[in-house]
Length: 170
Image 1 (cartoon, rainbow, N blue to C red):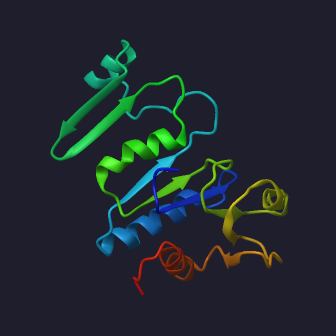
Image 2: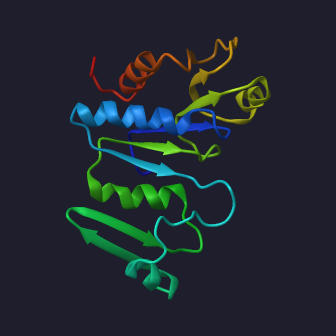
């Protein structure tokens, strides 16, 4: 796929993916790791831009294929293509020399995934999502095929993820 160390976080809206990714990233970065993120905007249409009034946003809206602005070490980038595959984005991320990437969404991609289950209605994802390496659940579930964690057990889940990715951060 282009990047060796990735972990996908998948599940329905409000299942805890983003909150968990923030905790995972915070722990990893406090231990000296360089972590990237990729989030799939699965709600239809383009994602809303934070500030549509910036010069780079105006240039992008005027037809630029890529538009960036740098300030004080921060690079904000927008790029347009008819289709961005996850592989294309991962290829671009290679230039950042990251230790690993947290990918939110992309249920159908061939990457290792942690599935977030909030309600019994979400259990259908166990059958429709491939490459599940762990489940984080808000409800008791009986799934013996993969590692299962309760949503409130952050430290155990985080330690497991880093071990799964080959890092010894205990």
